[in-house]
Image 1 (cartoon, protein in one colour):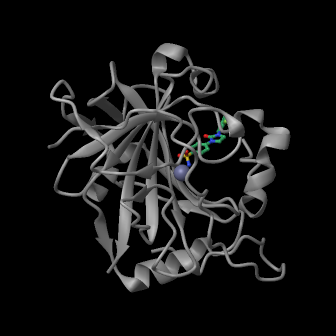
Image 2 (tube, rainbow, N blue to C red; image 1 turned 180 degrees about the vertical axis):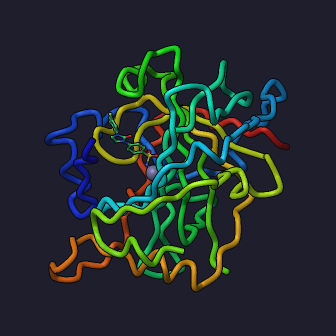
Length: 246
Ligand SMILES: NS(=O)(=O)c1ccc(-n2ccn(-c3ccc(F)cc3F)c2=O)cc1
Ligand SMILES: [Zn+2]
């Protein structure tokens, strides 16, 4: 499932992916003062099976960990969601320096990176079917601010990545913003209920350097650093961003 994604020409995505100019595109600028506290929003819960983690992959556009999603093994429920959504993969977006790299921007703040945990709604049969539905996919976005991946340096490299419980990546607070949006890369489907955690997690400068040491190119090809794989914020177009906190 190639992500036919070329961040360098994001402005031209709409030529092949008309949805890129849709009214519910992601990422967006989050203005915390304009977000509406919704007392009806319940807490979200993740129950992940570390045994579901399979491999970590550099696909030339991001670093992705894939999970077994053939049954309700690692699921996310609650929050703005109805039903249990299955964890399929997680990946990151990052910059060429610590002052940028996240896709969502909060009150003008760009974080060094943004982690996305992609879940899909099994009521739609499979992932490909789910991304055609507006309630098909739920992505938990976690911001990384600065404070292991030596053997997937080049595109196509993959390694076992097992017994990993991704809930260790969650910050202390479960406070979140939620809004309806899209994939931030082609096919830009507007199928995502975004759950953006307010509290960033901390990573070291070394960890960021490790991300930036990944390459877009394959082995034995000219080095093309895999950095700046983030889409700029898209028009909010009147959408309401709800907050789970005051
Ligand atoms: N950055 S993000 O909004 O979290 C994001 C962006 C793009 C995707 N994406 C793009 C294509 N696919 C995809 C993968 C497998 C498949 F069968 C069909 C797809 F569209 C996908 O999951 C998934 C998540
Ligand atoms: Zn993403």
